[in-house]
Image (cartoon, rainbow, N blue to C red; front, side, top):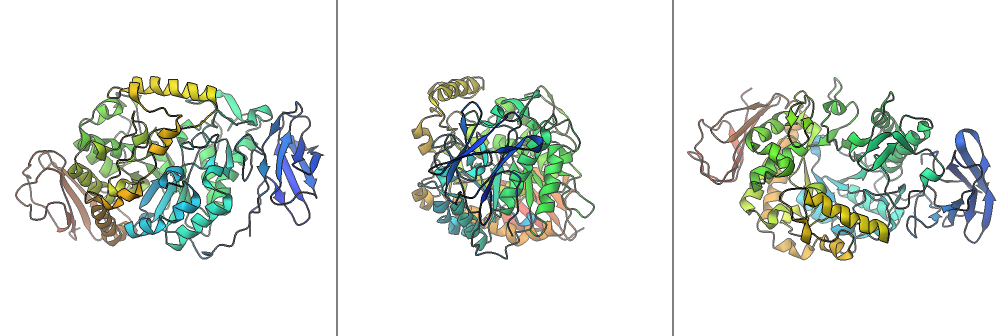
Length: 589
């Protein structure tokens, strides 16, 4: 049974109920192309409603404000002519082939982040289905889609969406997205969606014309913050929370990744994040639902657990700390925020043991303290990775590590994060060593494009280590096309393909059963010369890592305990060659 939502049109057997929350407008009309206009009745709390018996699925409609401005439905389900065009009435029903799908347990996750437009040449939901068998063979159990909420233009990263209920038309229709999710579930692959609730994009957001969507009391990187705690905030909160439930219920997504939650400022109680998590879990009790956050402040409180070990609100957080430490180890780059990870051995060891490398300590790059104590959290509360859209795209040329650094180093750090008790995440193409860049790209109007080009050069110019003078134009179609994966290179994977398949297979075989037992918090670190040495205690075993992330041969100061389950240098006992990683398992508790 489909869930009813307060926002967006409600299609009944004989009529369509159109609804718009517009407390700043005295009168609103709904206009249906080829059919006519109807006055909407202003009601309680700023709602305007109109029941139209002439409306049909497939009709295109707009709202007319008192000054004549024509706007799309802010809860539009589809925008065939982009964000400034009319909205289309969509039949929400779909013949799911995987009715019995309940999702997968969190400890089974191996996540694959992808951008729909750049993942394939066609760049659509339907063309993504063609690559699902590849992901299944690789051992992927969840794919995470970068934001798909409708944004202006032919291409973009998706973080400037303005119509959060409408899948961007450049990727296909809503039923195409449902077909993708259905096909993924048929292969045992979960689907997560990246959602943005901290700002709206600059092109196509009409909400401020008729609703108090923003608050001047709160500022963020993008300007005024969303009104989560002022007058009229109840409806803003419901608009966002219902959107989360909409993706999970109507599209049967398995989870959400909430972008930059540190920018969701809210002085009320409960905080918008708390209410969202609680209402989402109540709305989908019959399935495994996983909620992920990106949180620059490393607030461990968002990841708290119940006595049963289940997440109280959020399941996990992207762990930038482990990325930065592994990146410095593999590349030697210590400019910008990487400078705080120059001592990558200690930062990496702490990130592996306790989640955050910074747990309240001063961070030079930020100029203030960062993080809170996280040692009491299970390792599965953290998502580790060596690439993602941000860490590649924030470089001047969007270049990947593999394009300028040794394959041996890439293999070593991959062996660490893929077998760590934390949840691993790959970025599309990583598994075969794609050298295709992933630069930032967008397609706004001419004036906004000019500002983006200027702002991008200024931003990159402030970062040491980047030469922004010859950086690609972020608004050019050629920049977007350069980010498309060249699948023909899959057969020239430099040995990485088999390496990744082996590691992920070993994870499912050996690491996941350990995580299913619980535990893993009681991690320790040995001082084994200049080697990295970490141990995690589970109920029936101790998992151990010892690694040489350097270009020098290192002699260990002590023996390796337990049975070796993975070694990048078989037969190495007395010394560790450069970029050697060994994982072992011991039953000595």
